[in-house]
Amino acid sequence: MALTPVPFQGSSMNPLFKGADHLLVDFFAQPVALPSPEVLVGDVVLYKQPQGEWVCHRYLGMSPEGAVFKGDYNTTLEIASPSVAWGVIKGFTLNESVFAAERLIAAQFICDLQKKQCEQKVFVIKKLYRLMSLSLLLVNRFFSIKKYNHFKS
Image 1: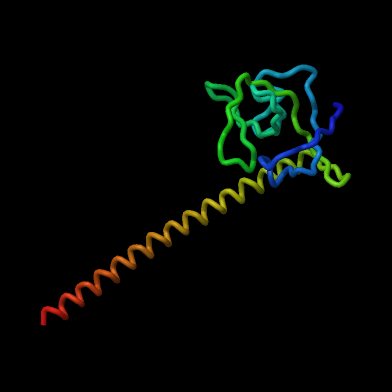
Image 2 (image 1 turned 45 degrees about the vertical axis):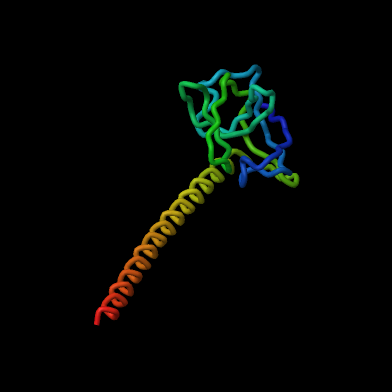
């Protein structure tokens, strides 16, 4: 297995890959049609969009429309058709240090954990907002009733 360093651009795979990184790609002898035993769900793969742009995203599986990919930092899924992978990312280099695939798995775990924490914070904020809205409504009603009774006497 010969790994080829490929420069990375963009922010779709933050915090795992950043603009100064070089991805270590294990290129296939020829493009592999997905699904394939050579590409596992969760692998970060290199594929080509129909417009010809090279993309490095995480493979999530298949849908009726094609292969489903997502950048770790992106909020939307991407369907690639034709569903072809050119290689699997096995690591990356940063400042002449090499990081292996284990770091990719750990980084994905951290991304998932951060996403869950963010979702929990949003949930709590929504609950607090609803509680505040209800409190303001009750306070407003209380003073309206008090004001009404004041004018009545």
